[in-house]
Image (cartoon, rainbow, N blue to C red; front, side, top):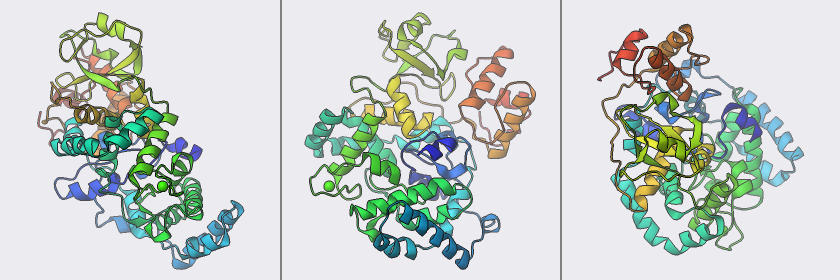
Length: 449
Ligand code: CA
């Protein structure tokens, strides 16, 4: 885990959706992505769902993929076997699993994919928080009511949130991924990119096999080794998986009680505040100072209230000292949200503001809530990766620091745009509308608004 944090402050799981949805949606329009946790997709760059669109493997990808020969892989497996042995894994488990691991080119291909487009909040939200997913979540809440109540009482995360994670991670258990985890992790451990991290995860996976939680041929997951209903990485499994049905196995694939209790325990360990919401939709006054928006600017509700922020239903905010940040993921013409401490817990599961908003909003709807009062505009800009890089380079040149241009439209880029808009006497909502793109010299061929 420590190694992972160097790259991505994501703690738990690497979502299967990263590739599943890429594959699914690419045929529609190239889109989409990931959920829970992480996306080891793009190295140390930020992995925000804002950019989760993943291009399906293109015909050129093979040219850039690292070629590893059978002999080299075999040497690597021998080294990994020695490390596993030193870590206390038995010879039987090593010989029956690691020694028989297969190099999976597709895993490397998926690991090398880059987002083709930045996703707008509308793109992201509308594909994940669907009426169908809401209805399914409500039905599952009834079906599993007893179990959900028990685990919520024990660990403190209300059922709608658990269902929201479940729905976003694997479509309620429908999409686990089907790559053998030892194969995917051995492949990534023998790659040069993040070998140490994936070696650690591989040894954790072998430890799970050693404890007999799952039969080796049933231990399948995403291309990056995320497993089961909630897409836990092996190290997260070892720390948080719970045998909740009493069969002495921690089975996050086939046991709903085990899976739910484990996700609850994991969220509890991240600091979930059981009596608090994730956040809520709010209304802003016409003269709201948008430079105050952003996750990093946390202040008491009483101060937001003074700035004219109201609940979306026009009721006043409570006048207390709960800290909150204000987010406008689709700019001033889209919905606004105040988010609380639990939002940051969700961000530890998957460091994406869009993902965390989707969890909160899906949970609200599963709990019986209605749709957003202010829908995100669907005609927002969809920027190609190279356009985002141009945007970032221009912002850097003008003195608005976005760091090294990486083509990923994340919070840092949004913040820099806000400051640039402020300088230009524009509404500083951080949204890359047509005028901003023109001012920054970004070709706007694919922008509709
Ligand atoms: Ca069990």
